[in-house]
Image 1 (cartoon, rainbow, N blue to C red):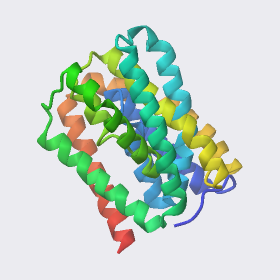
Image 2: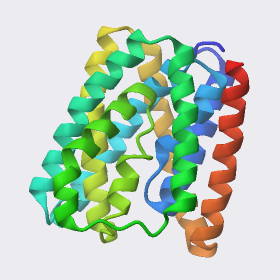
Image 3: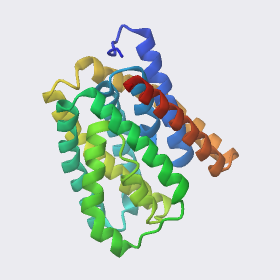
Image 4: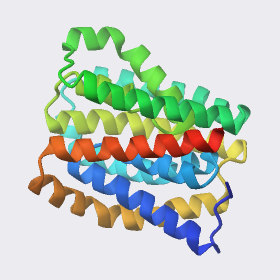
Length: 251
């Protein structure tokens, strides 16, 4: 696997395709941008590059979502605890990304993709009350933050945890966006310190906002015309294929 470069047209195309697919998923379902984008990039390039490229797009889009939906944060203490624990976890996860061998990080990513698929297939009706969620928020946020920092994918923990609360869409968006924005705020300086985030990677992340912005309305259009269940199955099949490719790369 190679490294991304501003002068490599295939790298730019890979970023555009990955972010477009992630943007379509985000537009259709309201979440899941890294779930598609990071594995696509990691299947073509170094997993550290994949995680780093996503930091700025994640930060910009999620801060915008927090701004738009901040009035719907009906449990602000819960949102703060989730964001703080996620940020702390992201710091630990980014250290793991810097120190662990790439093969180990990629193996963790494969396991997370498989876990995410299994959770979506086996526990679609999982529900948590606010009281139970308050009790587990530090653990869920911290674990999700570690995964976000280490492999760029926290959906098997963070998104599943919030989805199980059956929050109304505006509350879900502001809560999950605050979590992701907080993790990015920590990821960015730690990645810079360890040389994971370079000037080229940062510029590619900013470039990625272009296809991402264009793809979200496409996802919204798809979401209005196809059943959520069918679209979900297509995404799971796609993720399964990516997991197989990543696994073959490790063997």
